[in-house]
Length: 152
Image (tube, rainbow, N blue to C red; front, top):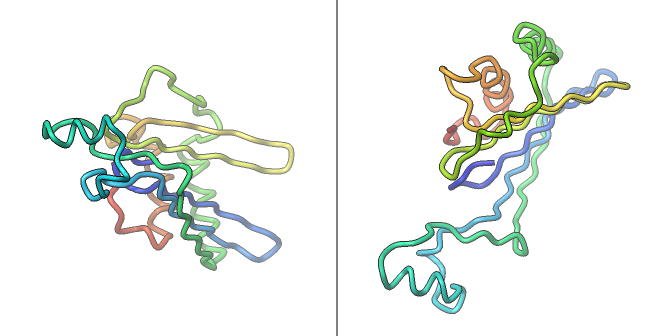
């Protein structure tokens, strides 16, 4: 979930021999400078006049979702499982509650297997911090049609 761009949701599934990547782009925010005056709140109008204030408007009531399903190969699946194991995903702590921000992105990776569930949530993982977690997420993004989207 990116601060200044639509959220991206990816779900990798394997059912028998079928491997799919379900992709969704969820738009909940809009640049407030591009909204007409009647769409802005009083706070936004005041900020606009002063030349400061928020840059985005959160609009959950008008969310748009762009879904897509991509077929993947057994090789894609095996490589993903290898990354999960190599980078010890199952032993990563679920959250780092003290880490969050207003300019960045929240990366959430969930694993569901028969009788097993694990979730890891990190704020803006990068090469210095949570690099193993980011490698797993980057692999999924690289498999998707969102591979050229900004990552932060």
